Image (spheres, rainbow, N blue to C red):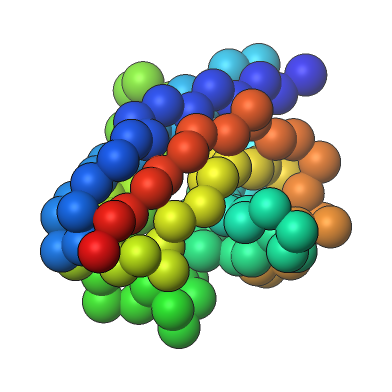
Amino acid sequence: QVQLVESGGGSVQAGGSLRLSCAASGYTSGDYCMAWFRQVSGKEREGVAYIGSGGTTRYSDAVKGRFTLSKDSAKNTLYLQMNNLKPEDTAMYYCAARTDSWCVLNAATYGYWGQGTQVTVSS
């Protein structure tokens, strides 16, 4: 059973930066996809970025050029560096994982989720 624990959210002013962390446990080997999604109350969960076990990454158009994924394999931790934050980035951010190689930014395809961490960007 894969478990995901996010941390690093908070409140910043527009133009600021935050780094989110997602610590994974319970996964042993094989292909995987890890992703970040975000959700504003009353709206659908939106894909932000993913990274596959081979290192392939993809970012949504909304964050491309501002957000960067990285992972520390020794710590089983995924990071999302968020720079030049905008008020529209305000949301609850969720880490998600799936144990195959079919990485997509579709929340319905991920079976493992963290509890979420809030990011608030003020203007």
